[in-house]
Amino acid sequence: MASDDKTNENAAQGEMPKVDFSTLVLSLGTTALYQLGAVPDPETGEHVSPDPLVAQQTIDTLEMLRDKTRGNLDDEERKLIDSLLYELRMRFVETGR
Image 1 (cartoon, rainbow, N blue to C red):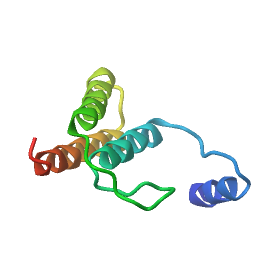
Image 2: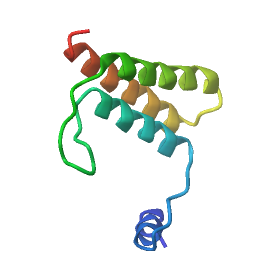
Image 3: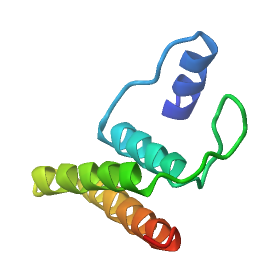
Image 4: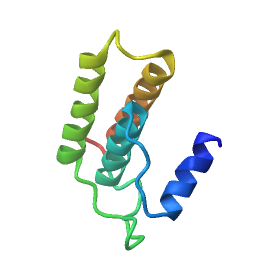
């Protein structure tokens, strides 16, 4: 069974997917996008007002995680966190802060 199939099966059964480095990084990235007002609240579908100060702290957390794991990531994980940080920084700049 493919991993996506297993993830979908777990979700259908109410189980959470396995947490790994990529899942953690994507979760923090989604949180930062929400804090920047770039994605809607998953429950209401409404966009919140951006909170750049809180978003900056989440972005800083991702940067710290990248720095502390340097040399321990495989190429895919390194590319994921680097590209996510780039995207979040660009969105942060768009907020005017």
